[in-house]
Length: 465
Ligand code: PFF
Image 1 (tube, rainbow, N blue to C red):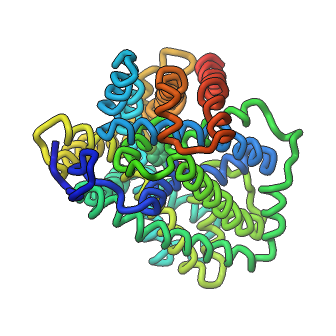
Image 2: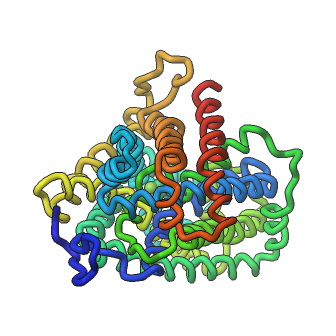
Image 3: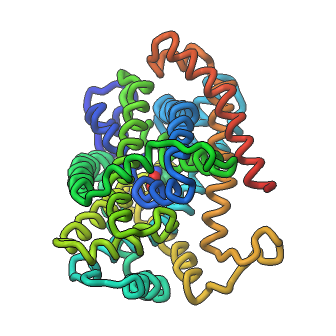
């Protein structure tokens, strides 16, 4: 195991390092949770699913399923104090249970690796949009000219590759510098900056004259617009937005000191993540409404709809640039967290040090990303599972997205919940979570019953429907 970041006099295998404080962990875990999911996906899925009622279901999923699983993952990481796979094995052995439970971490880490390969491609879009906004490419744009910017980007493997490479290099740079000099340093600078940028964006949105409309869109529930499918989407998104089922919170938990309450910490992270998603909605929808654009524009909402607005408002280049920097920062801190579990594992299992492990994993992941890039253009007709009706027309990119989101994440989340809820001794959970009596009972029932049942329902529906 490498000896980076020694923390002298710390008892408990100090050589692998600890977060400097509870706040450092909260910022880093929030950095992981707050990402494209909050700023890109949450507003558009809310838009597509009718607004307020969807938001309520999403909030319930975060509280009842997301937070309990996050606590379980952080617990496993901290209790094992190794990479997620080894941590799960150690916790299983300590509880006299089969080491095979660690398959949950294996699936999660594989998912993290695959997701990072295409998350980086989309992170690259954000980086490219910072440039477009800065040089004034949106200025005076029409729907056609703005759409052309997006479709030109997707049609060009070279442009996509350049930005994917830039983005992945940024991620590798941070992770290679280790816990304190890399992950923690970047989170403590970027997260407060991101919050300020977001508040500026909301402040601007308040001047558009359409803020009230956005507030009622997000918070006034119309349950007649809610479908069963929307409930499933809300649950899936709660998982994704809190970075669950990918071994990430286990990896981050492995650097958390024993005297910090996992319960309260996880709640803070979930609260911050939710606040950012809602603020992003409050920043985006007033602008969308003030131009009479569609809230239900789908994935193009921030890459096509918003730039149109930025191109036609005073100082739009400035707000546009700030907005896409915000998106880039959010994507960056999330991507860092996707790389960390696999790097931690390689570092502990091989003779490679931190920098070497990061470069090896980063390059492999970058190479896999090329398949997603080509799926958007040259290989757009390549549909490897096209012979099955269900996967007709799905490109490699679509398939990677489908299998990670619909199979691997729920599977990993389900196994984690079952393991922690049914195989780990209650006393050790009580001690580590440090929740008071009622809160612990609520959590324990959630992780034993509610979470597995909810995840199973979604899992079955997504696979069979
Ligand atoms: N939570 C991130 C987002 O909302 O964009 C995405 C993500 C990051 C998922 C890290 C999973 C993960 F491990």
